[in-house]
Length: 254
Image (cartoon, rainbow, N blue to C red; front, side):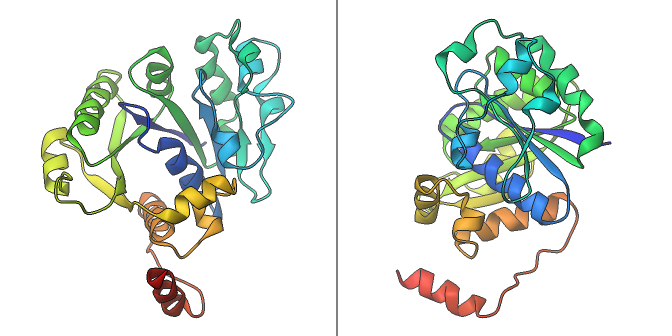
């Protein structure tokens, strides 16, 4: 039976969906059958990141009671399972967030990991993303406002008695005013699982509607995502590929 892992954030704009799409692909590529679910009901865009924005049946149809969740489950060309959200305004009508938990429980036996790209903030959608999860991972940026909001999310997850695994620090660029790992861990009292560097390849990959781990598999952010995936499933992270060092050096010279 799979575990439901929710990726959540205290505020929007931290890059949570980018993290979700790339981590989902990494876990699936590592042999853990993964289903990626767009739990951001109001502003879903996970399917846009994966290059297939329009699906005939989505999670919204499930939450309206019109479809079974298996009808909203698709297989991405990479082999990753995906349950997208509807991107039309009409999809927001008559949805019942209370159906999320029961729907996800129906597919627990169909994957090793159900990765939920939760809504940002502390609203009803975000709370539901936490409530239905077995494990919670918080995505933040290395600045005080973002980490402050992440702390609120952590406290709420603990009130729901959830296992809060740790924090992913995204968009790290090494500037002097960024919070250091020990400062983040001291504030939030959770381990920093990984630091994802600010990477121009991510913007290009989003433009190309292909997650960076496939678009540029040896870029710094891709390597960080792969290390994160390996750490989460208890495997050693190994860099594979002939000529890796040369490719990395070429990338750094750009």
